[in-house]
Image 1 (tube, rainbow, N blue to C red):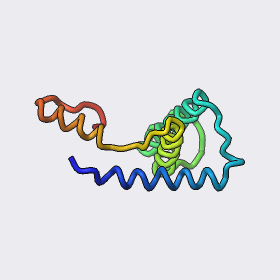
Image 2 (cartoon, one colour):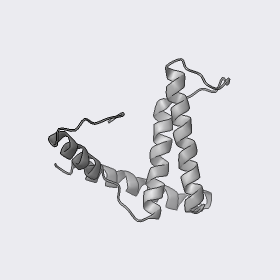
Image 3 (cartoon, helix red, strand yellow):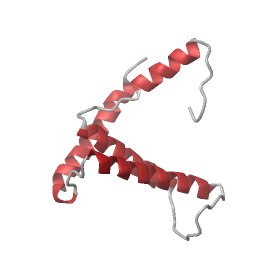
Length: 112
């Protein structure tokens, strides 16, 4: 499997690092536990946006939601988490694992 995604991902993490460094007063490291809670909150907001887009409003609010913005928020928090652990995110391990499952004749369940 080629590594076309790795370089694209690296560019994104570098851009986030630069942004956080330029705005470091606003981005004090909250600790790993709070980072995970922020991520969980953003995933919940993404889920809410997706449900609203299908007409399934679980909460009675008039809040405008954008699936694109919510995905961006989740990705930002994931990149911050990866940066905390000094990890350069790459899609390759996931794609390799899924490719192996397909080659082994297994079904890929869920959204994958």
